[in-house]
Image (cartoon, rainbow, N blue to C red; front, side, top):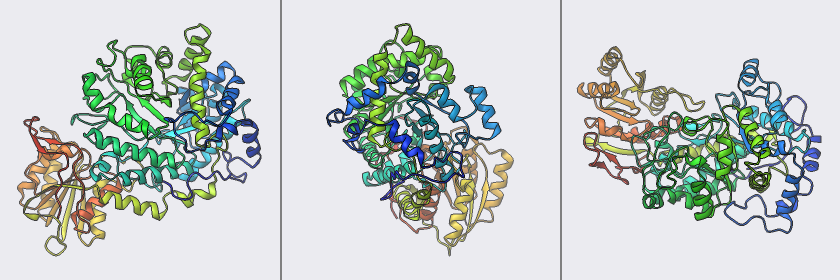
Length: 625
């Protein structure tokens, strides 16, 4: 999200929006941050892996800011919290009610006034991200609310904009293929472009920290939480793309975040709901999981997110990595030499709550070496636990100061301290502009991967197979797309000259639904079926097999994990799009129609369904026309 207008610091004006600061806020910012000019001398493009700013007095100026904070303000700086509502001061009543129930405040402004949080995280489900202009106004309102406090400082505003299946900001912002698709494309230039453009668009709407890229090496096909969020299974290939995306984001003035340290790629347990255990030896971890994180650190990564996983080879105590001093301080800071910001994964996830209570988790995380405490389930409990730990001597105020200094360095490096506001007038000049949308389309075309093409079934011919039936799974849209994907695919094929009909059959089609799809196939010249995480006993597999049995040419498109092909060897053609977002589904349609050649190559191996020791399609496999 970005180009020449990225990271503009022009101020908004006009009183019409309660979240939009008027011009006096400029003076508020300058007064609140007086004395940090030296700290900014190193410029917004310096990176955490480098030495702290070398200009005389830079850290001294930031330490002076810290010295003026009360203990309560210091505790607040460590927290990054969710809040419901599209506005910092005037959210909808339902969002006010949700805030009162979960946080004990009515609005984002009240959250900041009560807890003095140093960060806010945006979610679509919290109604923070309706449209770019609203997001920009919300961001400005949050910054104004923080600066209006005594000794108020600008806030780090973050979100999970990984692209692919995880994106909190939707259309009309530019949405790109996700990590595994980029892994299939294999282009560091494309990865950097994604970071550059995405970073510019995020910065234009006031988001200055992105929890991306995913640096996990996905070596477990059964991984339920990472999968296509990873660039792939080859650690060096993942490392190259992670480093490229980091440089893209941070070049646009947005702090990138490599996650989930020390590596979440080999688990069959989702840490949102359980406590995964990674059984890699120390040697395997070093050769596999650590490689992308080393590359991110060399690239100057601003922040690294922890994983709620147990790695006995790295810490035999049985604690999640988020709470492990040997992992975070001993390995990440000591062995890998990282001195940037460490942020936890969300503290409401089950993986970090299994062993300790919600009052102990934030304290233990800080003792382990964490700087930012992300989204605790009960902020009051977590905030008071940290406060009481300092008052009781378990944590020192000096320990808090270490983390706050890292956070302030990050804010200074990206211009958040000097001017956090964004200009509403510039949103339309940056967000979702045609140049960015075209870049997303071209990148998506370079990622679509063809694994099977029996008897040159593809590309389809408008003359020989004019009538196309599109059936299959329609998972919920990741972010404000034109979905559902069967409809998007049919519309795209229609624009390419076919007569295409969409029939949604879902991720678990009933016998009646399968019968209806088979009957519809009888009137088609070709069938395109979208698959989503096929299993040996699932009814999606039955649907595909019944469609193949009709004799009508069937092309399957895996809209999530590419491993689906192992379950349906009978299809005439098989494509992997790695996501069901519009940009990837439309690119797959262009490949099916022959408008572009398939260029992607598998970034993960696909193993036999009945014998996982046997590889059907190795890393790097991909057919061409």
